[in-house]
Length: 261
Length: 257
Image 1 (cartoon, helix red, strand yellow):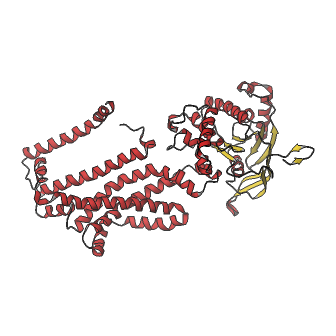
Image 2 (cartoon, rainbow over the protein chains, first blue to last red; image 1 turned 45 degrees about the vertical axis):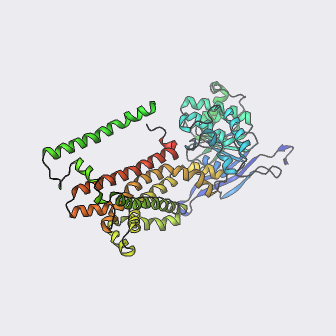
Image 3 (cartoon, one colour; image 1 turned 30 degrees about the horizontal axis):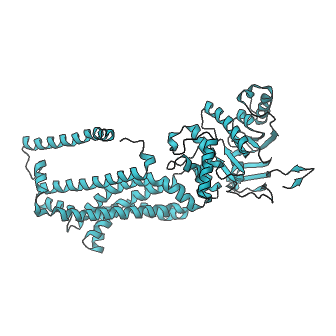
């Protein structure tokens, strides 16, 4: 690891003034205009903002699905270079499980794509299913599982190839409120147990505060990053923290930044 | 045992409906004294099937070859064309309009051309049937290959999956239910196409028997031919349904029985 300014560890992810534009000329649409984001390894960063503020675009740039027009993006360092593909796990709003594969084979999809040896991958898939609370469901079809359980399988799939960063695009947005709260706690537990760096996109301010060790607030029109700050709530996070004064202050701060009244 | 009983209960109403129809047919012909050359009774039709002068087996085989050949060619051609069309936007914009244009042609009107080019026989009939039956295969397969969630494609791309991997791991299995929907249409249309071919280039086959039956007022022979054609179409359709249950269990598992 490189040493930066007085022994500080260089951030794992470094986005500097990143700008992304779709189309050109009169049809030009600025997806994100100026995003600067430093993430340390092992952090859980929540990206919060209204729809159309470019949260998804930031994830797609980090996943190397998109190019960008300005700024720089660096991940990892010379000693441990970041490998796009191998080092990225993604979770979307929909579980996106393949109907023609059972649960464990769905979790093994990254192994097929990356060409990982199947035997250890299978063992790891079993361990991950245990981690996400789906032990015993290996041979089930996706349609036999509830929405929340399907999303747990999707999280296991995102972790299969042991990626260094997991990108989650509103992973619990399609779930009912109760399941969503349970999944929030589950993900916090999985994060602590796995030690992964997670970027978590949400449009729920409550969720952003509860989940994030850091919080990036993004605004639309123009799409840019309004603030980036630590959330210093104690761990393990609990749902009743939402009633605490500290939690309320963070939520208020985000409300103010987003101009929501 | 329970499964067999369920199956019987499921199919019993259909079987009874067919039998009732046969009984109504039989007695209507007797009660209203309908002439045999207008509308033969079911037993007359059945008897005709045992009359050796119609050479049922060889005529049925001729039609069967045309149907089976057309079905197989349409399946392969349809899937290959669909893959070509979806592989690149440029291919879609060039190949697809040609296919659509071709599909607007009345295929019956093409039949004389095939006879002109290839003469009489099973091969021109097969090709005429292909022109009738391949298009739904293309459309259905192409729909199945393309109707994949964008995020799912992004998921594979985020793992640096190749276009070929996206095709084999996602698009092709996703298309299977659509391909089977196409195969069901293909099964029915291949039969229609083969009979159309035999109407035009009638040297043999059930289509030829129907034409001859029409000219000679041999209505029982026409009805008997229709029965065999219908049985052939049904058999092909059932084969497709069985294959679908084997190869696409995730789409058919919830359907009873």
